Image (tube, rainbow, N blue to C red; front, side, top):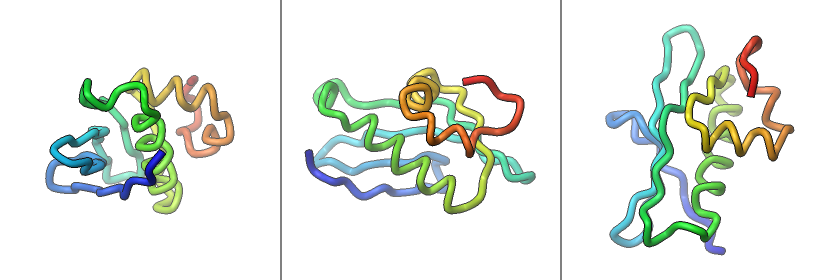
Length: 98
């Protein structure tokens, strides 16, 4: 699978990949107290089943970790990814069950 470049579109409050005419994305809300809420993941139907959503989540989590933010995974797809990859639980906000 190709390695896509993560774009943090702060204006639209979403992480994005630009793949031809398609734009898989994860929408987020950042608090002023250091939390980031990942609210919705969207992968265009034409790109489904290729691991692009998982790559997008992984790169977003790497960015979140590098910024020292506490994650609240409201999106079920993100929560499911963290369940399968428990090494990411360390950035989940304390008290949040994934």
